Amino acid sequence: IKNRTQMTQIKRINADLIRENLPNPRHLCAIKNVAVLYNSIFQRSLNIKVNKERMIYYTTKTLLSGKPGTSKWVKKYGDALLCVRYKYDLQNKRKLKTVELIIENEPWDMDKNRNPGNKIVGIKAAYGEIEIRKLVRCVGGRWNKEKRLWQFPYREAINLGLGDRIEQL
Image (spheres, rainbow, N blue to C red):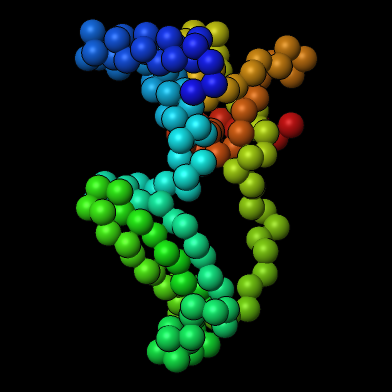
């Protein structure tokens, strides 16, 4: 954690969450901020992932096919081998070796109508739609006075179920 104010913010948020069991937009925003803070500080520094079974592991090496240390797997999988990863399970104290295989190879062309997740889009919210405005603020939305709409990333608009309200800028 970078400084003491972030630590006190996390403690305050945790205390609020324990005190009140009902989620509201403020807590949803707080939960997201804490997750982003923890993710940026701890998980990125160690490349930690959490999978479906809640097993926590981190990757130390990724070796591409043909590099030293992959010859055993190249013999077994041949041209289908893409890379070998060395991971460590923190809970069970185990070392894992995983392989990434190519199972299908076909021509592909980029979809011209696809919106990238980080593209800034706008949505309109009526004056009385307070809940929508609070949710938009929680995901980092900003109010644009000139265009009279909320601006935030396309990915967040879809996650909030506001895809039908999107207006291109």
